[in-house]
Amino acid sequence: MDINQIILQIIILAPPFLFALTLHELAHGYVALRLGDPTAKNEGRLTMNPLKHLDPIGVLAFILIRIGWAKPVPVNQNYFKNPRKGMLFVALAGPGANIFLAVASALLYKVLLLLPMLPMAVGYPLSAMLKASVWINIMLALFNFLPIPPLDGSKILLGLLPPKAARSYERYETYGFILVLILFLTGIIGKIILPVIDFFYSFLV
Image (cartoon, rainbow, N blue to C red; front, side, top):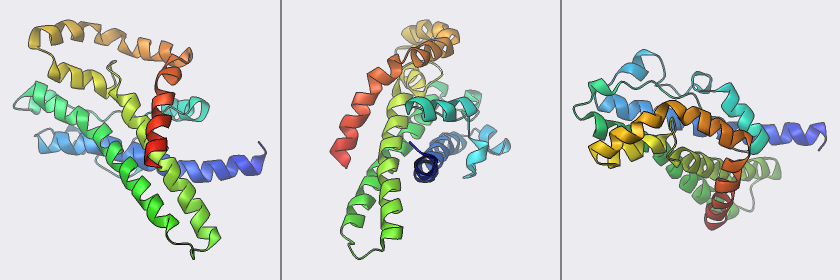
């Protein structure tokens, strides 16, 4: 791949990737705020500025193995009337936003195909970005649904488990990031979710 292809790939992938990460974290923070937790707002994380949400390792991971993540918004469940249910809704908000974006991008892509008179200089990059947006948002949703701390899936599982089972599961939260790191470095995460991502991508696009 020459330098021109690399630059073109960055131009096509960067906008949908940054938008997907930003909306994912914004959704977490907004739902938390609606449930009474102002932490994300007070720390300036309720913003569409992607620089506030970027995680350098998550961006590097996306470049290397096409799986990435953002810097989690801070959430204080003590503000919630029902902490378990509150965290469940907050956790669902991020992947939910990505699922919405994936479907919306797929629909916009199909609409774009019905506009054959669109200039090539506009139509090609726009269609490529929309297709990339579908894939990226499916990736973010599925990756975050993995039930491994600190991913959203672990918080969703905690909200669904009976209290006693949830407390037992919560004990392993300290080791979650280490497990994610091991699965990431060994390529196991990619082998698990990339085929599933490609399946849903082919279904939508």
